[in-house]
Length: 116
Image (cartoon, rainbow, N blue to C red):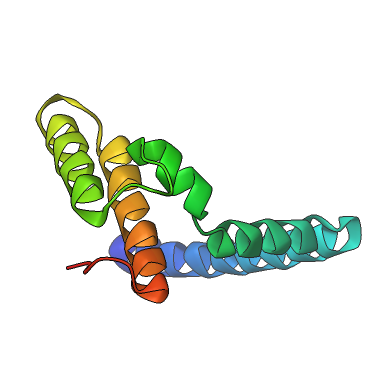
């Protein structure tokens, strides 16, 4: 008998708690939309997602100029990538990789060299 009462209390309590959480979430969304926080957050997310690396930034990361041959860019990339793989950071390694990808598309569009 006590187990049945305890089970009913747990079920009822969890139902009440679930409704309270849903209501609090709805209220938080309403408050966020009134203050403009939701719209600002959405705009910041879109801005971050659409931010691509520029050619100038890619050249700075790899330390190359506009006149640098594609083979030299690959050598710089390999050196920096391996150096960060051994005792660097994953963040820097990914920046180096993104820089190479950016310059690869630039060289492919210009028809310079043979990016592989």
